[in-house]
Image 1 (spheres, helix red, strand yellow):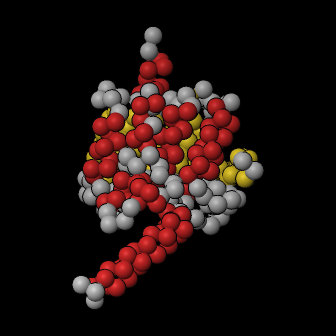
Image 2: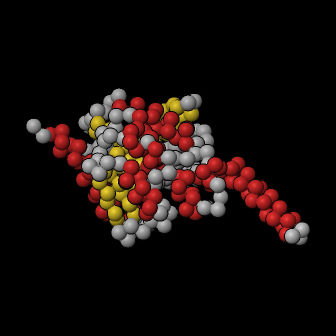
Length: 263
């Protein structure tokens, strides 16, 4: 027994050290900022939020309809400009570079990203009566939290999850992630505050977000409120390869215009 105790103690110490390491390095494992780029198909709009300068790619269109886009944790949102410009010709487009991403100043945190989203929405809402919001992967939680706080027109959630803590538990169940994680992205806790129509786009072969995590978020919304589209044969990062992805989003957003034109 005496010979076992030192081994158990060493394992406990190593486990504790690992937990401390995870706690202090977690944001480096969540956020993967992208460098600043140029794009001829959009203009750069600079906004201030909590003392940070946030760069937003803008494709302006006539009319009062706008679409705000929040990307994934390693996504260069500029890569969507041409695709979105073609897919959503009736919307002005606003693609947000999170703080620390794409030329925006600062370092990313959940509170910071949500603050940026609120600031961008408030600016866009001044000139646009109908503002839809779209978030992909990590950005889906930013979009949910925005929709819980502001009068968005419609909400599109792509490869979304219920909470980042629950996703982490499925990968690292042997760690106390519920205690360790600072940026929790708990969309499911805000779902009841979202009252607008929601489109959930799920990649049929998503290798990053387990299907059960997307389904848990769907279950937190009312059945009449949410529409679910499962795109077969694509993964978390290859969803763009399917034309069904943006077609589903376009049709969902078009329902707003159809509703507005009814007598």
